[in-house]
Image 1 (cartoon, rainbow, N blue to C red):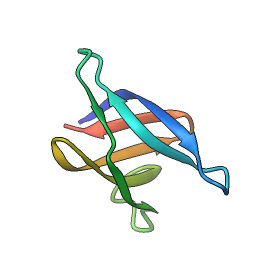
Image 2: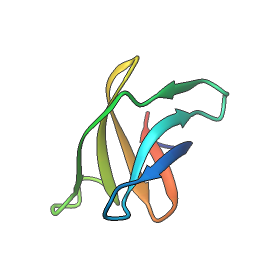
Image 3: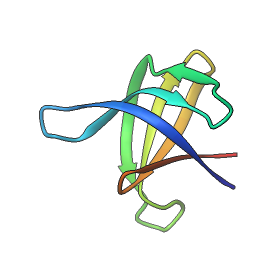
Image 4: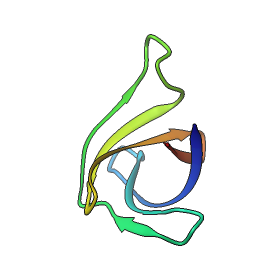
Length: 73
């Protein structure tokens, strides 16, 4: 199930958004300690761009479609 989240980001030197903080609608938030990888799904496994990030919770996936960010729950 997709759950929309708020993401604070900075821009890379190429202009791509790099997530730095994730906030759930409950107010719970995590700082993104590292972004490991960003990719698109060529086989339709997921929609948009998937970011593999490290937070205090461990390794997580964030997804971005246009300006909307979400997590899978």
